[in-house]
Image (cartoon, rainbow, N blue to C red; front, side, top):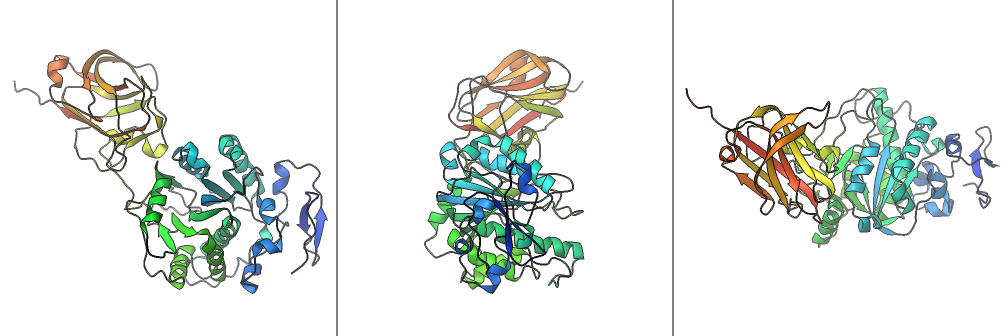
Length: 466
């Protein structure tokens, strides 16, 4: 193992591929862009973990993790949980910003000090890394200031050969290479993260989570009296797998050992068995859902869904005539307003507490003769996220004002919410048999909790026989 030069002058150490030693090259202008110009800062390589299984990464070079960071404000103080998210350039949809946003939105202010989010930009495209890191810096300034967000990169020399691989699975060469590199990506992320927190959980860059996910993880950990190696919070692939941070160095070595033979979502099961955990521990319901459609493997679509993730089936079975749904409350894309009105499974879930005069409007494409309305809020897993104070109104007129929510008027009060729900059986006696253009839920007071609208069911009046 070569001796590494002292880096106290904050210079970058670059590897001259024509020589066998290291050279120091001081970067004069340390801007964002210069961090992506050279992959030669290779203080370690994958071989360090295979040739010397007992090697301690920190003895190789004390500050290699600092060199891997693209955003330098990250804290190193030990916390409860590290959330590791590798991401690479995709041909179509980029999901990473929405994934980080979902985690942040579902984490309380107090909890942000208990977690690290480590985003590993694992692509070798320097321009792409510069663009994504800039967007992360701009969008997540707050959690960067808290030291919660780590954004890292690896040097290309860390990676083993990725061509002419012998693989257990009969796959095209492009998929073999993609899978092998993905294994090494995971290993680098494990090695970077092992000292940050008590626990480590693996994510992908195209997931959503739910409010209360961190408490759900804590509760599931505390539930176990027996020794465990891996707890799972998604049944899919390698999403939502929780380990003791003390074990992920060993997992990294095993993933590297079989990087060319099998995917990590096979290796981790073998690892668990070698660590004497002989069955899977999957929390049900799961708390992380895969939402990506286009895989990071070019040309592959992957519409995977977790069967144990709460999909919130409809129970009221309303008529759902064509309508558009609007709200003044912010929300994550996965929990959008259409969910609670659609016949498909799903709910609306705001990303902040309700305020007085917040509104939720169903604007019908054509005015409807409605006999009955039922609305349920909150869920059995989050009963307090119901609407605490609100009224329901029916609009007997509306006027389109271009794209977006129409102007609804001639409002009739239908009733007030009671314990998060409302049921109006005598709609026509209140509206005078007029057709309804809009339904409006209006919060009458602030509440401390977020707002879940589980289901809005409308029932159409039968036509009178002539």
